[in-house]
Amino acid sequence: MLRLLSRAIVRQTCSSNGGRMPSVQPKKLKGRMFSVQAALPKYPVAPLEQTMKKYLKSLEPLLSEEEYRHTEKLCKEFQNGVGKTLQNKLLERAEKRDNWLSDWWRSVAYLGFREPVVINSNPGVLFPKADYNDIQGQLTYASRLIAGLLDYKVMIDEQTLPVEHLGKNPLCMMQYFQVLAACRIPLEKHDDWTCYPPDRPGAPKHITVIYNNNIFEVPVYGGDSKPLTTSQVRDQLSEVVKQGATAGEPIGLFTMEHRDNWANVYKKMIQDKTTKAALESVQRSIIVLCLDKSNNTMTDARTVSGHQMLHGRGSSYHTGNRWFDKTIQFIVGEDGYSGLNYEHTTAEGPPIIHLMDHCMKYISSGKDWSPATDVKPPTKLQFNLTQDVSDSLIHAKENADRMVSDLDLKVFVFDEFGKNFPKSQKVSPDSFIQNALQLAYYRHHKKTCGSYESASIRMFQLGRTETIRSCSTESLEFTRAMMDSNVSKQRKAELLRRAIDSHKQYTNDAISGKGIDRHLLGLKLTAAENNMEIPELFKDPAYTFSGSWRISTSQVPAKSESVLFFGPVVPDGYGFCYNPQEKCILFGVSSYKSNSVTLPAAKMAELIQDSLRDMRDVLAATMKANL
Ligand code: COA
Image (tube, rainbow, N blue to C red; front, side, top):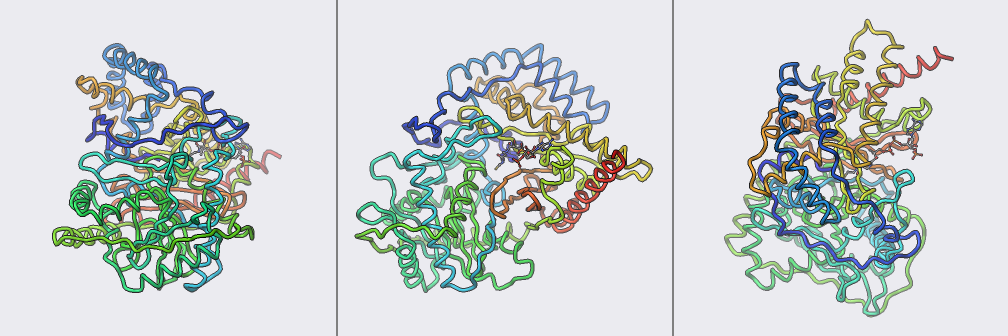
């Protein structure tokens, strides 16, 4: 998803100290998880001329004639000068590694990023509402969720998960191996990340449960190594609720801090042996399960619960009941709403959503394990806080509440059509939706802006994402025409189809290693790593401006009616995430309340819906006219 990069990269050079990746022993079981891993192509370094040409094209809708000419000159100089040296060095790097980008990416985009992970980097996900409304229902639902997780984990442990495909192409499955028993660890300037993979001796057999701000180690396997049944997990959770009746210190708030603040506190906390062991228990655990109390308000429950999943709604609600460094946190509320929050260092949305979809299916399946024996009870983890650390908690609380109060979110379902309509018009649904987002933005701001969509590059070994620059000359022409009552519907439809085709072409290029943003990043990092002066091309305002993603978007499709959301990545921007289903589209829209330029999320949500309707109307009208 990494839209944060433009901010992170200016501060961070190429540290490689953090992030121990699990050294997986891939099994080549036919059609299963790692069967094609070694045969996946390596992520290519695109030809320099190609990137320069595409970069300039992407700037056309964003720059004035004069600005464009200036950047064109810089591109030429770069291409004929230092760019050649950097390109050769990058090719050398690519020759020696499975993926020339992946270590840099993890470091620059995530572990070196110092702003709080919450809102800025960790997405939230809201699951479909479940049918319960009290603590008994909550514990039963949470137990089913954990039983489903353990069922999924068998496929990870035995590497029997089917290989995921994009179209006909198999995808790299490494991310799936890195989301369980994984955690980010705060360190000054550059965090660390750790994972306890299942193929190592002593692999973790417990989850962390947080209830009423109390943190517990909860075994989910018996002494016989068998997973617990739903009712055995439920017994464990009931015990947690009993032991956690008195509210604990909300130390989870530290994980919402600026990373250097948190690193500073963490360093002090691990001086105490008991506290250090407690922190390690959380880091080692398979996942964190947050059992939340009631939200006490149900006006626009979907959006309220969205806030709950994204940041916990502040210290007087659930934010202290979290551990945001954990790669996966399931969050189960008392009111039928549940979801998750995930730390982004090692995985994009799709592997997380795959796990979630499996759990959703498991919950309603009636399946269960046979009982495990010799089950150890939950242990409440002990944190001994010095006065100094307790004082820091007061600041952490203030900082968290400030961030929470500034974030505006709207979670909604557009139910007038889904992928079915664009498909019926023989156009790509994703490109259709992206153009609706462009139109919605243009409607209010009367201009366009740097626009990011994540494209998967997992067709390549250890691939993560590339940027689709969704704003194009074609999209701008289309949005302008839509706002002009003198333009005919026929013409609007033609321009829409052209804008969609242009977006689809960019998408196809991005997923097949012909994007531009990761290549430009690689060239810039090559200069930094070789202590060379940063080329003028990267100091050009056009480079910064075009990569300030005021529209930051991602499609995260799920089988269930779930939806993902994240914060804007610049103060005057929006975060847009969507899950297109066949007959509806679920959206999460965010903006910052403190920004005077952007609209409240609910207002922007209305513009998106208007845009989708208007686009349907022009296509449908011209379809009829053509019949
Ligand atoms: N006519 C009819 N149908 C069409 C069509 C056309 N011209 N073009 C596409 N379709 C169909 C597709 O066949 C597909 O059908 P399905 O629903 O049966 O699968 C469907 O429409 C969706 O295709 P499209 O909308 O073009 O999108 P996509 O599935 O190719 O996804 C991306 C595009 C960019 C989202 C995808 O390539 C990607 O990279 N996903 C990962 C993004 C990611 O990592 N996000 C998480 C970040 S945290």
